[in-house]
Image (cartoon, rainbow, N blue to C red; front, side, top):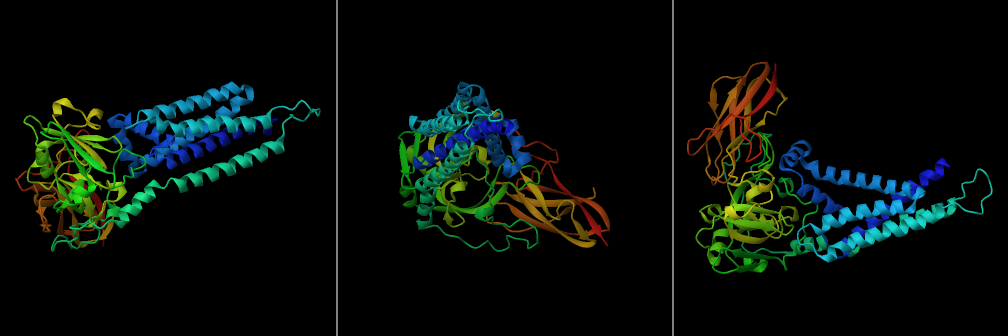
Amino acid sequence: MTRTRLRWPLAGLAAGLAGLATSAAVAAVLSIRESPVIAVAELVIRNTPGAVAEQAIQTLQFWDKPVLIGSILVLLLAGFALAGDLGRVRMWLSTLVFTLLAAVGAVAVLTSEGATPTRLLPVIVGYLTWQLVFALLAAALSPSPLSHRPDDDGTDRRTFLRRLGTVGAGAVVVAVAGRWLGRNRERVEAARDLLRLDGVTMPKIPLDATVEVDGVAPWQTDNADFYTIHTVISPPAVDPATWELRIHGMVDREVVVTYQDLLDRQLSEAWITLNCVSNPVGGTLIGNAWWSGVRVADLLAEAGVRPGADAVLQTSQDGWNCGTPLAALTDDRAAMLAVAMNGQPLPIEHGFPVRTIVPGLYGYVSACKWVVDWEVTRFADVTAYWTERGWAERGPVKMASRIDVPSSGERVPAGTLRVGGTAWAQHTGIRAVEVQLDGGPWRPAELARVPSADTWVQWVVTLAVEPGRHELKVRATDRSGVVQTGVRADVVPDGATGWHGVDFVAES
């Protein structure tokens, strides 16, 4: 009886997993980015308070989304097992559990950006699969009136196992077939690989831009190493042949730009450092790359911005949005619609085919990946994704500096020590960097040369350290003469502040 009772939750699990396989297959075939599980995960992200989301990013870092997906799957498996166990008592109870799970999926899908009835098909197919497969397995678990042995529970064990195996094999086949038929990301990747972007260059790293100290982060960040922060679980795969950007709102004329339109224009290129607002003091959510694209100011000039406008509400293909100060898009900085990163078409994770780059602003108010819509407007009339969650309306990058060598806790030889790191004050520039050893006087560091104020700068200083434990701090001064504050502030609501420090041990 105990073994038979355990088969009911197993039947619920098998039915649930089969439904997940069919729903994911249908989503793939229809090129729907959000399978029901992905849609639920993004619903959780959309409704998570800003402080909670920031804590998750700080604690889990790049594992935040895998942990979220894993948690949802664990809850689903528990629900499937519960549905199976309740079916042993009353079939309508299992139906109720499956219906509630499907309802959550339907709500998540219908509240996602650009929701259409078609996007409900994966949920419907998955729900029907749950019901049909569970009914099939439950039929083999129902008591048989032909059984007369007192130790026989009356179930057809062999029939149940055969059906369970068939369901498992069928789920695998459906998942593989759906993956094969719905290769939208692969098609977009193939289109990206075939692109030849005339006018896109990849210069060498400027002379004297690096300090040549082992352990200091590379001045140019490779695409594969560049940090990624976004709210989607599955990055949109957008075909460049169908991509369009609509510019509307407080403009004299609406403008629609295609990908080919951008490529036919004069491209602007620059070294630009991007810094996430979630980057803590001494953090690594920052990178520097060679970006190629079309100047935002030129596009807005064609649309004719009307007096009174002070913002552009940017919207991504996945529905995320941000409010960007109009002044930062139209002044002399290299704000652009980027099509290439380090001489190559943008990686999908970094916004392919087109994203917005604005030097000097944190990404949460400017770096719109997979951008498809610009509404010229006023800050007084709109709110955006992160500002609705407690972040500041405008996000200029704050001056910061970081010690890369030595790392905290490292053991180094006593005597002469080469200390190095990076500093940044985007669109203002760094004039000086100083380090402090064990609370002593601040000592100037040597700065590398950079091509513009929109990139970070490497620094190096040579210190004499005695054997023992030491504490090292760093601070910067920007080109306007402002000294970096040592007051510690959290990343919320508009970026962290404070001097970065490390502890290390010098050994004789």
